[in-house]
Structures are given as C-alpha cells and as structure tokens.
Amino acid sequence: MRDIDWKASFRKQRLLVKEYETEDTKPLNLFFLAAPSASFEQLLSLAYTIYLDFSQQRPVRLFLIGQYNGSLQVKKTPADFLSIQPVQQIESLFHHWQQLSTQGGQNLVILPQQTKELLFTETRSAPSTLTEQALLKKSGGSFNHGN
Image (cartoon, rainbow, N blue to C red):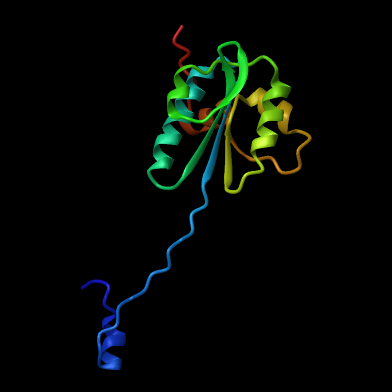
C-alpha cells in the first residue's frame, strides 16, 4: 500500500505503483597494512569492526597484508585477523597494496600514520586512509596501549 503513488493514481484513474531505482553499490576494498606501530592491535581491531559494519551494508573485499608464519602474505578472510603480524619491510607492503588497489570499487586503507607518510608522499591520489592520528582526533584522547 505504501508503494502506491496516490496522486498520480488519482489523476490517471488507475493505481500506479512507485518505482525505485536500485543503487549500484560498488564494493569496498578494505586494506589493512600491517606495519609496525605501538597502536597495531587497536588499528587491527578498528579494521575488524569496520569490516563487520560495512559488510552488513555492502560488498566488502578484505585484504590483510602482513606477516603470516614468517612470510609476507595477503589474506582475505575474517579469520585471518587472528594471525596477522606486523611486517618490517614497509616497501613490500606498499608494493602489495599497489598491485591489489587497481580492482574496482572504493579503497579504504588502515595503517599507522608514519607508514602513511612514507608510502603516500609520492602518490598523487592517495587512497582514503585511517590512521592513529585520525582516530585520536575523533576520540579526543589517546590509545590505551594496555601495557
């Protein structure tokens, strides 16, 4: 009943139903670059929360770029959040991200602030990023490092 266009139906003397356009939602490419940081665990937790929230609203492609069992790998499942470790070779992280970021959709990269400054200073079109600095501005406080 609520999809009936009552004004148009009255004018046309027959029932007309409203047609809605469906929005073609492009997937979100969520990248977590596991660089060393005092806030590594908090950033990882943030990435997991964002993944859970966004995956309920739209398609999300997950790219966890970090160290697994002693080697740099890209993992793509939520279970891989449990075993990712920071990588010391920042350039390798960037190289992997560059190869994967050409996929269609919107890119969101979560990484430490100092890594962002190193990786994206030469890039003309830096992706949307979330860092500790951005989180501190939002929260108005500091991370609890739990030590």
